[in-house]
Length: 179
Length: 147
Image 1: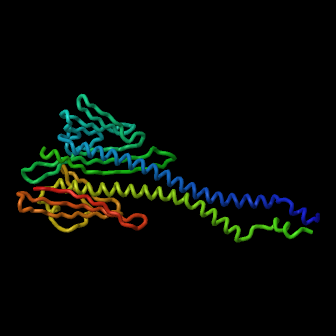
Image 2 (image 1 turned 120 degrees about the vertical axis):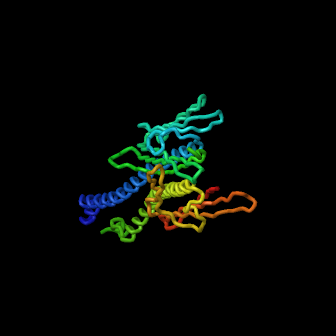
Image 3 (image 1 turned 120 degrees about the horizontal axis):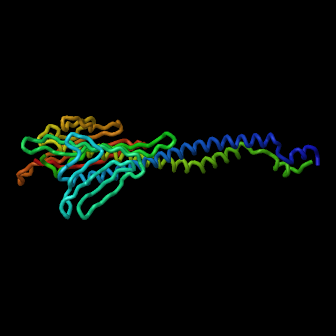
């Protein structure tokens, strides 16, 4: 075997080093792109969770307010994180109570024998404010009442960043025609 | 002296081979990024749907709060309502749209049936926006106020 053939038998350390260096550069670029994509996807998922939770809660609040016959709390013109109103139920009357708790928002239906309790937006950072609003109407027809609901749902803080989704809704209580 | 076929084993990669490998790698990675991108596009679309619904229902609720003969409810073709402040209990409620992305219109159509003693108005609220792929999306909500 000639001397030239002996030199071609293996790969030199320099060749391996350059090969590893090039592969690591390519991998770093790909992983960087992939990491950015994954971070974006995770943020999107967190935002989606917040949006769904906010939309479900807002739909429930709207459904309850549309059935309301008397707004008890907060007083007209006042804003609060707790709200109470009366609704009609098949058995008679019931009271809906929304309360902002550290672990979510509690909805309670107090209707004698048929009490219900449910915690919305569990494990999320929630801010909620109900403002009892009244609108002047045409002379003789009384005022119209409603609730201005401000809701903010955020995912728990991780590494200093958080996703937040805000909703603001004016919900008119059409069963309450005069105050 | 080496045989010609043995020498072939020791030659390096050609430019075409490397190019082919890179294209293949790119083709394999692309679907993963497309998938990630699609999930965020879907999230944005959902977000816009929810916010558009909010802007439309807020305007409709405001319209319901007004007296039947209020100037805001004058019959006419669709008109843009971007900024809107309602007055309630002496305070202001901002019912405007914070994002420039959305456009919102209200159309009022008054009906006075001859065989019915009361007139009524049909309110049609439309909220439109442009999506990331430049296509235009719109939601429409209708309601009614009576005298």
